[in-house]
Figure 1 (cartoon, rainbow, N blue to C red):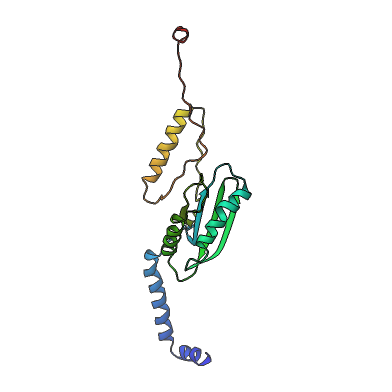
Figure 2: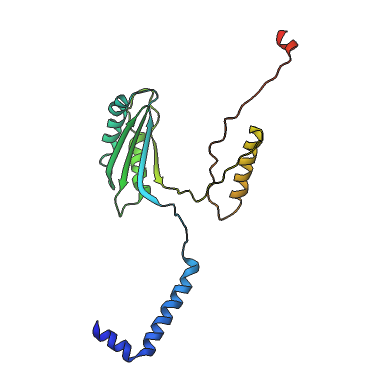
Length: 192
């Protein structure tokens, strides 16, 4: 190491040329560098969701989660199986080992869950998907003393306008008041 430093000190033109080439390479790479403040990254994780309406967590665990775990626990490329039973829902997550394609592991899991015939009557069909984290970059709040129908229209118009910009990839509309339908009938028609 000491000799290489002595060599660069003895040959300053080479050191300057190396510095300029590194700076130039960095400047040329900037336009091709993907820049995101909060990138959406795949977790290399697959989630399986099965609903079993109105079943207790104990029932969901024994009748849905256990058969589902047994069906997918030895999928090649999957590791770290995590299962959770809730009121009316079984959630199973598997991590994908490094070096395996998540899409391939997902297809193996989907094939096995589709062939599963031990789920109880009334259980939903297993929903298998790759888990992707989307981070919220901005939040836009709309409020005002306007009718609910106008608020719905305005929110969806703002969503369409934002999605028209190529820099915006996703816009979620949340927490809108429930839509209502009103029917008014004249009293005379009501008596008739």
